[in-house]
Length: 272
Image (cartoon, rainbow, N blue to C red; front, side):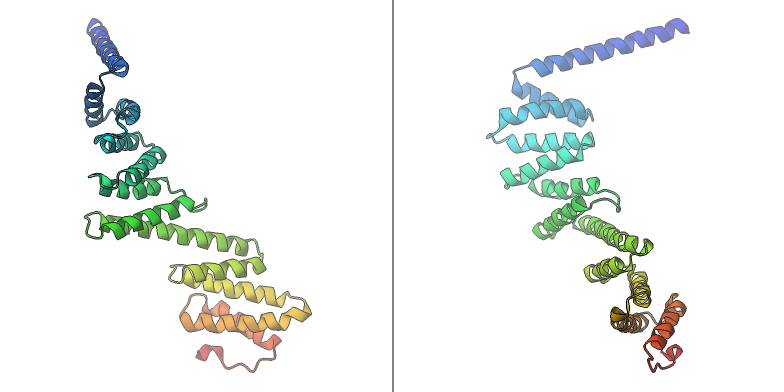
């Protein structure tokens, strides 16, 4: 049994050595048609590092020929296979710009957005790449409205947009959690204005109300009345939109305190 295992190891080593030797010969070859053929074979077998290395060399060789777009396409796909989405996206973009009549144009346009999508970071990080992904995918939908990929592109756009909404929510909430209510009001109102249909709208509006209330009652005398009036306006807007909110009881307490401080002739808030 031991000798058999040794034999298998030696056979495997011989196969690997032969494969490496063949690959090195291909790398050194100046027969570029042969090199292209082998690059395609490596790609189809899923050996993306080898295919990528060969296609990268062939890009300059075939530049200006009727095969150039195909080389760009295969090189970008090889980079996808290696999960190098930055490089893949770059070459898909180059393909769309330099070869607009290529048969690979539609797929390349989609892959530009998809590569950005795969690079989109977690919501707490900078979201420029996420916005690039949305723009690229939307461009694809606009250019190819009847494509089979349109539904998937819309799904990705929705997912990316939800990430931006959540990022906006987290950024606004950060000031609120640190009790910087003046900055919180600005950030919360910006979040509501930027994404008015946000799934966090109720919470954002309540945090805005609470921030304005706490900012008002702790204000210096010359600013207090104006800020208390702003709190009342915020309260009415909140209960008008969310009369059955889980935050309603706390919101009503803010109203009662604010109204008393303003000597406001309030109606029974529970009747609203």
